[in-house]
Amino acid sequence: MGGNRFVRIGTDRGGSPMIIAVDGPAASGKGTIARALARHYGLPHLDTGLLYRAVAANVQRLELDGSIEADAIAACDFDDALLEDPILRTDDIGTLASVVSAHPLVRASLLQRQRRFAAQPGGAVLDGRDIGTVIAPDADAKLFIRATPNIRAKRRHAELRANGSTISIDKVLADIRARDLRDSTRSSAPLVPAKDSALLDTSFLSIDASVQRAIAIVEAKIAATSYKGSDNQSSWP
Image (cartoon, rainbow, N blue to C red; front, side, top):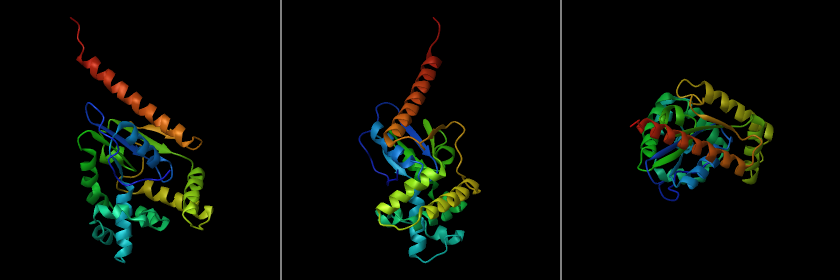
């Protein structure tokens, strides 16, 4: 259940713009679900995690120290073409991305880039770790995707092995636990569910079942919003 760079998929949904926020930890399935929602509703999709991976790749390329905020800030200027680089999918870059993303000024530097994407005509689907809380707090539908650390480690390990990695599952699990701790305890935009987000646990669900539940959540939100809007417009004769 990996991610993808932002692309326009299909055509915009008719009617008013719709923003869907999909948050969750690594390997929870949020990227797969976000892409499926984008296809279903004909909306563009942005995997915001790739932005931080791009910063991490720049840090590595420039031989900087990602734990130093000034160094990480110096790596924030990059072209969208970098988002296509396969190096962003490596485990080392993923780990470093978690380090650079903890810096408040790095998150601030990438904030408007993400908000511009969300604000485009027709709406958008964004996935990350602070979409529903920081990037698009007024999103029409918010989902927080989760799964147990062991399940997520198995998914990530299988993905890495398929790409030729020989890393052990114990190391993958340790990395996931460490990343969860960094992401949930950082001072700027920690990984927490938005108060109005719907929780979806994919631990024991297939990809298809996870996607169908996500669509049902969004549809329920749309229906509730439409009902509330029509109710507010009605009046007694």
